[in-house]
Image 1 (cartoon, one colour):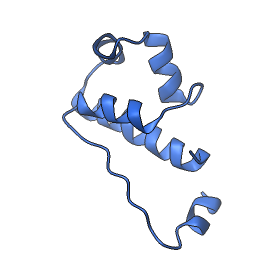
Image 2: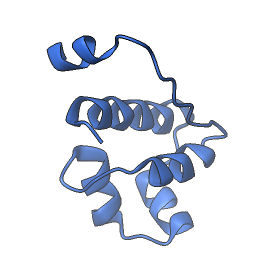
Image 3: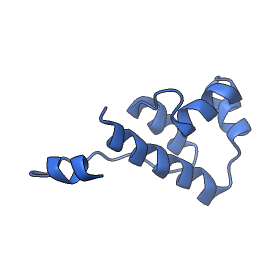
Image 4: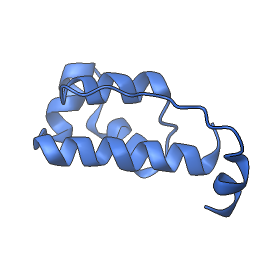
Length: 79
């Protein structure tokens, strides 16, 4: 995943957690990962895959949608 895309996904996942006030500890426990690894995924020290993002935001009663936009490459390069 492109660094800018992964960072955008990471920001949106963190915002979902903040909006629903679900703690990282609760998410880690529910998903069966350590709090340390979850924190690393949310801060960029470990990859945040679409699969993990979907599982995390599902706990917030949200979903991940991927949109492919024609000509969007230049926008990502400048981000």
